[in-house]
Length: 358
Ligand code: FES
Image (tube, rainbow, N blue to C red):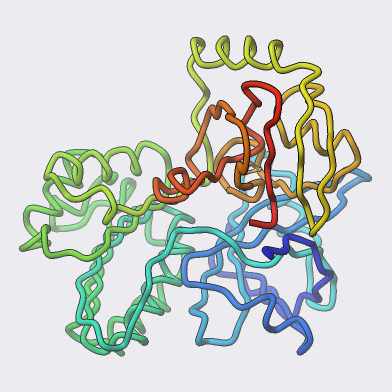
């Protein structure tokens, strides 16, 4: 059974990474160690109460599982309720509710493999990629990792020193290329954002055999991710080798929003069966989506972003059919296996059953 209950963890350390970013390391008591074991590239849902309001956010782990540290990185954003609270108030010794790690922005690493990996990261999108780099290089002694990392200027580069140290430590196996939009260096390719043209040029000149790359990891601002993904798709890179982790969702098209509104209306009053924490209950579809309706019936169904990105609300459809709007947080394999994001899903008729424990 997949458990998505929050546990109160103590903050062991808050580490300043740049003026805008801090890493939070949690102390994990021995009895919870198994529950908080993670895979490279996964994330945590954090919950706290700020001025009486419950606030939940997802942040990626920056450490490798073998490091033994449960640590996420939070970048302060203008108007960001949680990230500003972290910057202003959070200190070692405080406690936060933390959900066990989850997420599918990962691959299986195996010491017997000699693979080639490439990452495109932008800004705080480096966080899960950092976890993947550390894991790939330490777990697979014959594997290589190339990172294309876009930032505004040198002062805003998260993990600047750690990345340089990894380069020294894994000489010849880790290649690192910084792209800066607000600072000019000697090499034209590295001046500017990781837009489509730059992604194309970086692959063409720095990845000799793209078809040999076992996995491409993409995480950062939306336009950068779209550019990198399009550059790979155009090169006919197999879809299953391209791993994308989004932090935010685009606005749904007017047509999709209208379609979902109509489906919500049609679904109103339908009965659904919801399994959570080993218990199954019948609940009515009242409004919004399956998640909102389940929670309105008193079920503590898990969620964080409510925007189809984080997959915290993932459940498996075990009967009936549902319509799903945004699905960024799911892989094709998960969709094929019947998983949906309940914050984006509406039942299409009577008899729908979803299982949060699957
Ligand atoms: S709550 Fe984040 S995808 Fe549903």
